[in-house]
Image 1 (cartoon, rainbow, N blue to C red):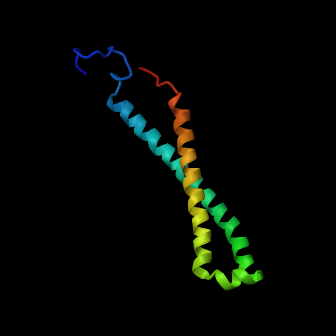
Image 2 (cartoon, rainbow, N blue to C red):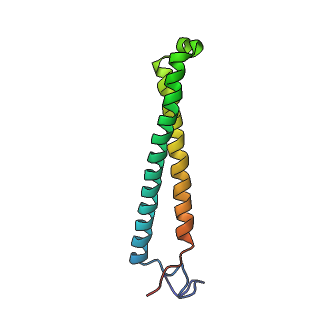
Image 3 (cartoon, one colour):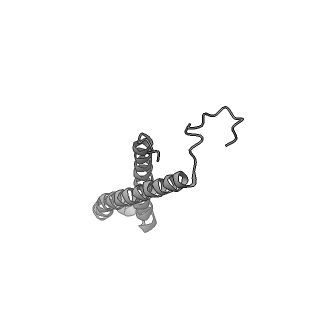
Length: 108
């Protein structure tokens, strides 16, 4: 940055070198990967936990048998799995970013 700015020479605004940008990109990729993996695990667990009672109720309850066709059953299960994925992935990404934001970068 130019010396005419109101930025101190060793301020965080001055430290945006190529290495630090690469480090930030690597941390963002790792953070998002952790979120995807946690979200996928949660979606699988929620899908199974929803599929069992949904399919069992269609076989046992007369109202569910009459009103829940295959499309409705799939919609119930996929909605719960999708919601679990996005909720857990978002919370994981935010928690990882928060944890990494408190780490002070080491200066060479």
